[in-house]
Image (cartoon, rainbow, N blue to C red; front, side, top):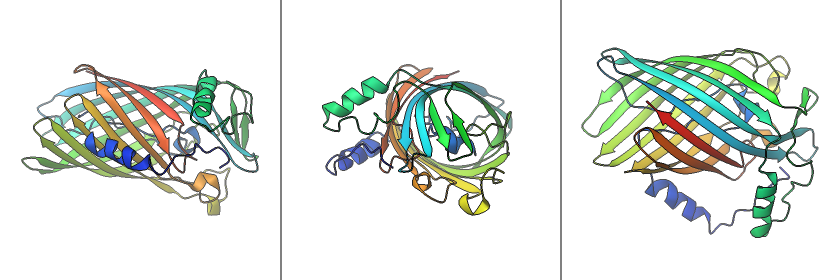
Length: 306
């Protein structure tokens, strides 16, 4: 990818320290990048089991700046996204929780381009490729499949699933999650229109005020009609290492990609850190780390839990 924010090797150990020193029950959701999210979406914010008919409700607001393009300029992702994901979970049996998620959002030109360019200049990276396209506009293209230059509405998917406990220890729990994603609308770059099945295991450690969660998911779907089967995988994977001590939390995200070739074949890596303002509200910031081809430049998230 042409656009690369050069990360010095000396910074990487610091990033890893942040991840593991701030390893909360409130969890990070998916990596923002609509082209990859059009295949599947991982909306999970909480991993603990509910019991005795309890329920909870989560509202997850996200805002991201996304910028990448390939050498040929026939793959372009230059825009900002605002999204809301609503989640509802309920304990229905002794060891079964049901959960439902619905996502909506917007892709538009945004307001952050100048701020990001100024920051890049401050650290010596110049325009960092952001002079290729007009600022604060939508430039969204995937080869000859689609070109979007106007604001777009993201609707869906609707996701229904179950969460169950496999092992209940003193400090360690192991949970299993399975869900079915149902697209509400098919549109190139936003949704393939194909349903997807996601399954995963969650490992939870709780000790006093320290909480560490590790989740691993796989998602499986049909290849869309607009791409040749040899260019797309019918699966992708998501990993989240998340930890918290008291009100501070952070973690590391990994998400693979269904694309087999070019810059879009590179997986996404992202670190995040945040603060739990109260029992009901948390804020967090997400930053990309190399190779930075299928991930947002920066994401801000505000989560309400009820």
